[in-house]
Length: 320
Ligand code: TXA
Ligand code: MG
Image (cartoon, helix red, strand yellow):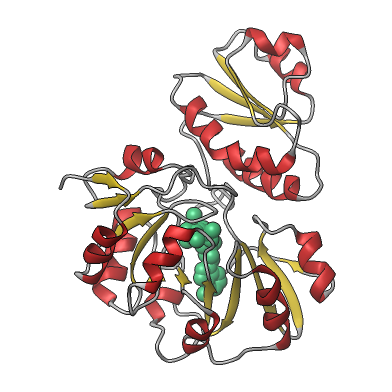
């Protein structure tokens, strides 16, 4: 199958209406999207992504009204959060309605749902009658894509169309929030800062999403990983010194120390701005992963604001 990269929303709509899976831009990362109401299409998404069936998919809808068709509850906290963050990078876990298949939720009685904020994704959703199931458009456990070219490099030949909406503005996946036994949980740190969520609904507990625990010991948190080995360090200069015999590349917030310049490196934000660092994170990992290095050394970012979500991704990328 030839894979075309284009910016024709009409063409993407045609592919989706005829049961195909296409990559679409969102404000967080590119999604591998298909008709969530068609089990054959949902099967295709799992196959193309090589994702285990026990790992459920997020529903993408165009409006609050549309969202309410697919859930059986709409608690007050959902109102507060969606009012503030939808359309946007916040996914809610809510009791599913009977329209949503067990395949989408991996057997859970809750469905993950969000309205994406990318204008092309919204226009696309407005031109179809069904919600889109869309995991990030990367092979299972690999680095998420934030450009059409990232998707092409990983999935060309497997999907007919990549809708090119430019580089994703937020660069990190959505934050995932849901309630269990009257307690609100953050299941994935993401593009909406935890502090902002807690301002509206109070303190959250933390938990990994269900069904993401892999069978093999040691694989527990592996995700978002480059093929090149990655180590995460609090002390960049010391780690660089220790590894200086190897072909190393560095992922740094900003190049504050001249000795860094000797090595291939990606600077996430010249002004050490964490939002900008999030936007550039996956592109930086993609670049370093193509350089044939022995090792990528990434520095831990300040554990504040979106820096916490970035550190979460780097920790998982570093798990071997
Ligand atoms: O920003 C995003 O959320 C992107 C864009 C494309 O929207 N999507 C994304 O999807 O990151 P994915 O499939 O790569 O990650 C979805 C996460 C997984 O960790 C999954 O376990 C969790 O959401 N999830 C989905 N449905 C769930 C459910 N019913 N119960 C618990 N966790 C769920
Ligand atoms: Mg993903």
